[in-house]
Amino acid sequence: MRIVKRGWWLTAVLAALILLAWLPEGAGAQERVKIRVGAITQDAVDTIGPYAALKEGYYQQEGLEPVLSYNINGPVTLQKMVAGDVDVAISTAIAPFFQAVASGVDLVWLASTAKNNSPLVVRPEIKGIKDLEGKRVGTPGIGTIHDTLLSVFEKRHGIKTQHVYGRISDLFTYLEKGEVVGLISWQPPAELARKKIGAHYLAKAVIPGAESLGIIVPRAFVQKHRDVAKKFVKAHLRGIQYFQKHPQEFARWLADREKLDLDVVRNITLDRDMISGENPVTDRETTKIIIAAARDAGKIPKSLIPDDRAIEGWMEKHIDESILREAMKEVGWKDK
Image 1 (cartoon, rainbow, N blue to C red):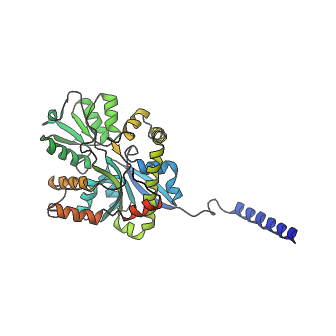
Image 2 (cartoon, rainbow, N blue to C red):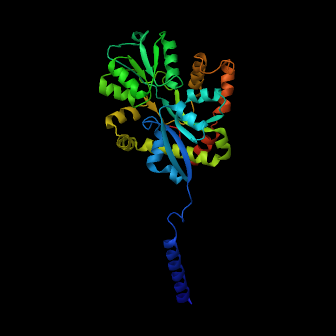
Image 3 (cartoon, rainbow, N blue to C red):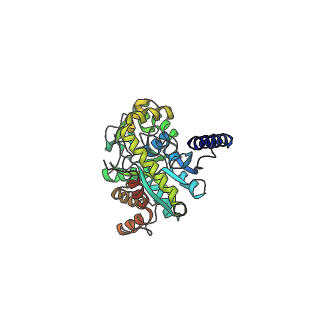
């Protein structure tokens, strides 16, 4: 009887293997959920968690298939989200996020992907902050967080500059030619300006520790696909955990992917004063400062948020970290 049973089992296994061999490729695996991700050109050095997750295949392990599209800045990414072409943004900043909310777009900020990320580089003739008075400084656009943070920087130091708007590539050229004396931007343009044209950092971050980039989705998306949103956040957290264990390995991969000098990548991603991408919890105090600055600059109507209490209410409505907290438990998150 034992011999008969063993023979029957072997026959069944062979039959199953033959059947699987004839199945279409991928038919034996669960289909991944396609998710359209809005990013910014060369944002990988600023957005450590999501790109470490991409490197290690964590999205796929969570059952997702991210399809990335690249834009010139965060406001453009949000415009595409409003048009229905982007499901989630990973490198759009807190200022344009709330400016979009002010325009009537119902968005939700799920987690932080970067803090700091506001380097101010200047030409060699600029020796100190006061030398910027009345000078032309490049920013990547009136709707960007960098333009708002430059206004905060000016107010704190009692100076006023002329804001010059443009694409980062154009602003880099303006800086090289002396048509602007400084540039506030994301990375790597600032570090490349230091390395290639002799610029120097007046500030690695104009507001140290300030909230910068985050994972953003339409509220309708998270209401309909909460499980997908959580899986995306989990992949981000797992990416951070990987980076904390293998920072040099990640820097080498990033340099190769972005076709950048390895020293440039290391100088950015390994310097926490430049980019801090390891704390996914949103910094509420600096967020409040940024929102107030955008309001005072006329980018957000004062009637919507006339005082600090109104700003806090706005933050409570549109920064939802409940999914983040669930994801942190599921990945065994430990604060550093």
